[in-house]
Image (cartoon, rainbow, N blue to C red; front, side, top):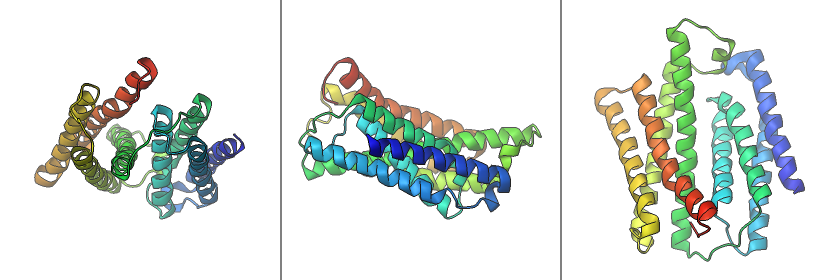
Length: 264
């Protein structure tokens, strides 16, 4: 519990330091004073999971554990990208979110780990990486929409200084989607190859929604390449595809594990 509390405090400290630096210096000049706190937070977050897994005898990938791992993945991506000067402002949102997912995991307790061979573990870890990457893309899409709306209305809020130029933010969004799409493709391929009874009753909805999300993200990337899709169109497609992915994984896990009391 001590490790979890220190990690949560470090996440909140990193977010606070980052918000202060952005308010003072803007996106271009923001200092890196937040970086040590962010690194400590993600390291302790990961350590909390490792210790819980050692106690449980394996990796716990149930609902709250998976949610916490996605939060951890988002925090790691944000810290890496922000430390090299790209979209550090995202940490103001992601770090408290990661802290909340870790707290939820701690409060709900740890579930005995299911026995998974290396192939199913590979599939599960690819899925979590894909969800974390595409969740970051969804947040970028929301920020892009807010920035574009403010500029269109000539509302020059102070928080706009914390964001990179519109074109740069849009480019980062599509690069993130491309990486997430590749990971989601690998997730679906390993599912086809390694998961038995992929179309079983408790997996069919997850499979169908995941494929629909994959098609939506693929269509968005194709539209960007072929027709130059951007702005509101890109935001709508990103959020719709992410909503399908959330329903596919966390929606099904919530119903199976927390409502029906079955393994997800």
